[in-house]
Image (cartoon, rainbow, N blue to C red; front, side):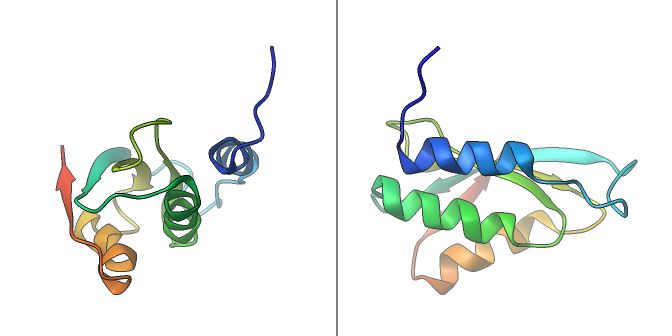
Length: 101
């Protein structure tokens, strides 16, 4: 198996190594897709993934290569409200919606 060196791959590796805080263990985990209206390059989507992962209760934020406008976020529903996942995007001036919440 070969590994690419894109920022997306690094983000997924970082997420895989992320320790789930003990306070989140046993809580209900859910996921949501965030649709970003604006076009994002790999660096831009990588930054958003990192910023989302910094939020308390967020377990991971990823995207499919070539679909940079869709972010998949796994989070502890008891720790963060899904609407608050849009905060970092709106702070950067992006227009985004939750899909599947």
